[in-house]
Image (tube, rainbow, N blue to C red; front, side, top):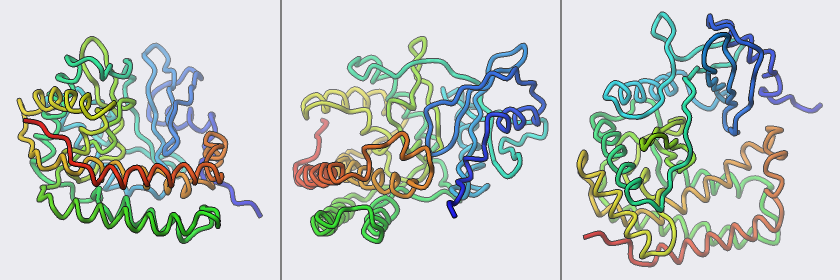
Length: 327
């Protein structure tokens, strides 16, 4: 018997009923947004601006872990930092529940991805991230996990090696290369004595909405403890010289509000490698969710795994190169 995935029960009518249960009156307009880990919708509200409703993936985060993210974003908002925290009900609660689904409501935030070729934009992004990290280092998360080699690297490697995703013809290549890559990550992490702080965690340009020369940071769903550089390196692109110029601009703004240890620059390629490994394992772990085969048809083909192994080889070489240097 085919197992029904929980999200198949989350019909448009159920989404609207869930929003109505909070006291808002929906106008039956509903738009599914580009999200796969959770389900996110823009929902029309009678006589008011639409709301954004995020329905959390069952069994991913505990209630305490979700609430901790909500509290972090609200604390940032209280400092007038441009983030978008969830809306609270009359009792002050931000995590809601309807027919077994946990969800949160957010005001709609317009904007577009920042122009990372604009050095003024990079300076502004650095300033905002410096303010976020100044609060992030004030105390640790109590419930959320850390971004580390075990959770992003070894767990991903073990999952893929323990399941039938990688083709037989490529398994040995992945086994040896993955082991070498993780060993190199261990070496690089052992050389940097960093203090983990609370992070956005997934600070790619798609999670930054630029409007009226202000960056608005959204979707703290992957917030966790980790090195500060994790929230900076995804703003860099291009060749080494271009990345150096970009990073210098970001750090100029960042250091107006928060100290930064340049030793963490040595972790950039290790963190990139862990993200690549984690992404492939994430797709594999979610493959029973019908949305994933539909939206990622190129995954789990021999060509995909061949290109993935090539990308990991390039990362192993990159980790043997000197890190970026900022003076």
